[in-house]
Length: 292
Image 1 (cartoon, helix red, strand yellow):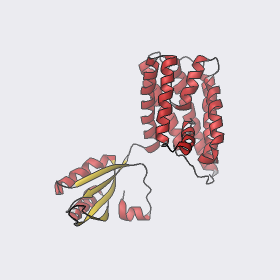
Image 2 (tube, rainbow, N blue to C red):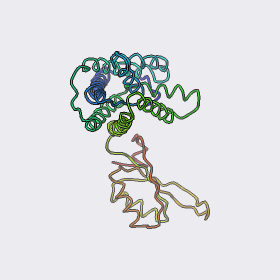
Image 3 (cartoon, helix red, strand yellow):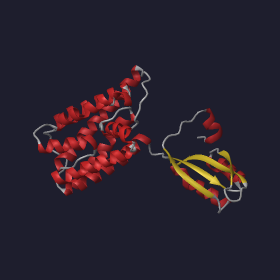
Image 4 (cartoon, rainbow, N blue to C red):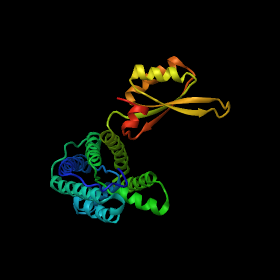
C-alpha cells in the first residue's frame, strides 16, 4: 500500500472502474472472514484482527468494529494518504462491513480448520490485493504505522510487524494458541497472494554484471534475450582498473537464461541480482535500459 497518494483528478471511467474492483475486493474479503476464518476462530492481522477478537468476546457485529476502529485513523491520516485514497478506502471498508453483517448468519463453507486457513487466506489475499491495486485499502493499520513512524522514526514495516505480533499474541490468550498459529499461517498465505495480485506474476529483476568481457556479454544479452543494457563506468576498489559494468532489467522467468549466458562467456563474472518493485518504461528506458 502506498503511504502517500496523489490527488490527481480521476475521470468518470476511472472512478467507475475503481469502484467496481474495490467492491469486488471488499466482498471477497467479507466472504473470507465470515465464511472461512471467523467461524473457525482464525483472525487476520491489523485492525481487522483486532475487530475479529472484539467481535468474538462481545455481542457486537464484526462489521461495526471494522468501521468504528478504522474511521478515526482515516480521518486523522487523510492528509498523509490523500483525499481520493481516503474516499476509496472508506468506501471499501463500508462495503466490506455491510457484507460481513449480511453474511454473518450464513453457514461456513467448511468446518475443517486447515481448509479454512488455505481457502480463507487465498480469498482474503485476492480481495485485499484487488483493493490495493485499484487505489484503496481495507485496513487502517498502515495509516497507524505511518503516524507512529513520524513520531518515533521507526520504519513503517517494523511498526506493522510489531502491531501484528501484538495482535496475534492477544489472539493466543483470548482465542487459544492454536487459533493464533493458524492465524499466522493465514496471514502469510494472504500476504503472498496479495503480492501476486498487486505486482503480477512477472516479477522484475535488476542485474548488475562485472566482467572484462562486458562487450561480448552485452551483445549476447541483446541477441539471445532481446534485452538491451546500460554500460556504467566503474573503477576497481583494489586494482584501480577502469572497467564497465552492465546493468539490465529482466523478468523472473528470464533470469536463469541470463545467468547461463553470462557464465558461458565468463565463468568468473560477478553477477548481482535485486528485485525491482516497479519499472516505468519511457523513451530513455527503452533506449538505454531494457526493451520488450
